[in-house]
Structure formats: C-alpha cells, structure tokens
Image (cartoon, rainbow, N blue to C red; front, side, top):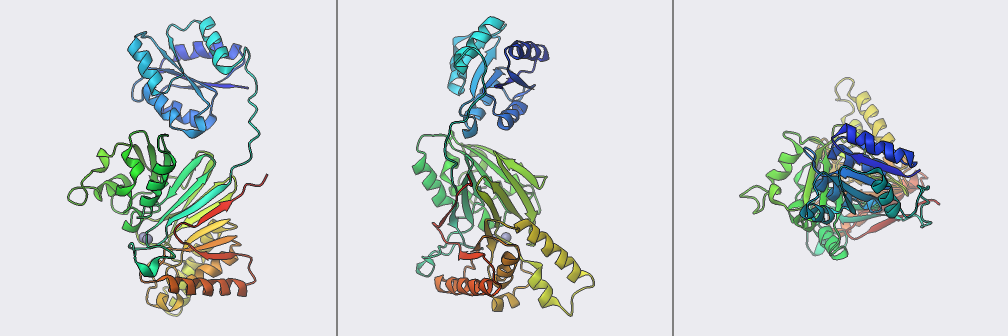
Length: 435
Ligand SMILES: [Zn+2]
Ligand SMILES: [Zn+2]
C-alpha cells in the first residue's frame, strides 16, 4: 500500500486530508510539526509528503530542503499546501524542493487528481522495488595514525594522517572520526560530487585532538548545499558542540564553527544504540581517558567495528597481577567480556594496536593497546578481518610491518581464521552483500 505523510499543525486539516486519502487506499502518517515530519519521512519513506508551508519552529521550506537532502528520500514527492496563493511563495517552495503547490482550502477532487498525476495512475499500487543488485559496502582508510600527524619519508606506506575512516553503505556516507585524514576525504568528495548536495554523517569516538583536528579543513562543510550530522558523546568536561567549536575559535582558527555555511547538526547521543538511515549503530564506552566510545555498524553487507582508542583490560590484569586492588582483576575480566561481546563476529574490526609488548610495559594505563592483546582478543571473538589502527607516531613503516607480521604469527598460532592487516591510507575494504 502506498504511504502518504501529512505534516500540518492544524489537526482538523490533517484529519480532513487523511480522510480523503484513506478513501483512496493510502496508508497515512501524520505529524504536527516539521521536525517530527522529517523524522517520520526518514523512518517510513512515504511516496508522498503533504506539507503545510507555515508552521512554527520548522516551516515547510525547511521540510522540503531536509527531504531533498536525504538520498534515501529521492523518490518522495512533496506537495506543499498553503493558505496563500502568492506567486513568490509558490516559486520559493518549488526552489526549496517541492514538486507541487496546492492552495487551501484543498478540494478533495483536486487532491485526488493531483495524486493520480504524480503517482502515475489512478489507484495506489504496491511499490515494486527495482531489481537492482545489492550495492557493496566499502570501508576506506583516510587517516590511521594516533596522537599527531606524522608526514615524511618513513611513513609513506602506511600514511601519517590521524584517525579518519569512511564507510559507504546502504545509501549513506558515514565518516568515522575527523582527524587530519578527513581533509583528503573532503577533497575526494568534492571531486566526486561537484554539484550534488551531500548528506553526510560524522560519528566521533571522542574529542581528543587527533580525532577532530581535521574538521576545520573539511571542504564539504564550506558549501551551503551540504548537510552534515555530527554525532558523538558528551565531551569529558564540556558539551560536544562547545568542544568542537573551541578548536575553531580565534586565535586558533580564522573561521568559527557557527560561520561554516553547510547545514550542521551536532547531536550529543544519550543512548548507546541508534540508526543512521537503515544502518543500526551501537556504541560502547572504551577504556580510554575521558569519554571515548567505539562504534559497531550493522550494514547490509556485514558489521564494521571502529574502536580507535582502547586499552583492553587483559594486558592490564596480567601486568598488575600481584599488586592489583581487591576486586580489580575480576572487574577487568568482566570488562573484557563486554569488549568481546561488542566485537564478536565482526566482519571488519578496526582497533587500537599502538604498542608492541616491550613498549606496552611502560605504557600500562595510558588507554592504548598492546598488539599482542588485540590479536588474541580478535581471534577469540572470531573477527573475520582485523585492522591494526592508531599507529604510534614514532613507528615508521618498517616497525608497523614488523608488528603486523608478529600479530599474524600470533593469530596463526591460535589456529584462528582471522585475517590481519595494518590499516594504511588509501586501503579500501569491500564487503559484498549476501544475495
Ligand atoms: Zn587517539
Ligand atoms: Zn584519545
């Protein structure tokens, strides 16, 4: 059954239009304001949205622009309804993305005729999805380094940019962290989509500088046609929005975050599970100073876990054995159980593997992992592809390759099927959906 969404702050008008459409066999969703309407549209993807032009808070123009910015709603037709018949209102609505403009009071015959015209025939029919092949999911590394960018001849192979990974899945472009790697990603997006509006989601694990420092140089943020949703958890000492804008304040940067022309929404998450389009996302608090999370994305072609900064308790427990506080060993065991559950069976696991065993001895409790512990955990969790990540700034290409060889040996010794790679800039992992 075809679906229509009616957005109007007048309940009598909503009921009236709903009645006309129900008689014609349409399934109806209703919202009393623009924001709720946009959310319902994302959720149910109706064939038609009927939207009042003048509503408090979020008006019809804003609804049109938001819907047009959603790739997943590109087939949705928008009819703007208004009590005003001015040519300029009509023109503005069409420019904002409306397909039709209907002057109130809406006559049932006019509405029926219009719906027939824009939905292609006289009666609503089931939408038959086009027989398109399922799209592969891609995971691309743009920045793989921890702490600080490390350009130079000794890091050419793995790359020197800090944390940034791009996931394209299920009609979404999701960016994981905004380290300096987000700059080349921005340039690529601009090249690939020179005129189309971009609708991007940025998931931040935390606000340590190596995870946000590239944002002021992210080109798509400087185009008014683009929309960027930034999701993360509260900064350790102040809100996410304040922390992000602080790095762009004078005298650190010439342009403030509030002056950036793209439509930017910063959402501080409270729940540990949410969705980005059709992708289910789970977050998990990492063992790292401040508020830091990892994300698990369930895409149509498999699961991707991104945990760039984390110290498993496994190593901490072993090293602290003997002088650990009462109960702390048991607590650590339980925390590692939760980590195992979070990464269990992941198709792709991108995880902090900053230190080798010798270095870790002097870095216990710093919030970063020993590669030996990570290899053991990934094998135990039956991860399919493990990517060592957050490379130490003092590690050159040769050192990272040695750590990779060591991790592969460990995993092979455990008779595990997990494959191991060290993340490097430009590497793209492709997950193919099961038919
Ligand atoms: Zn970091
Ligand atoms: Zn950090």
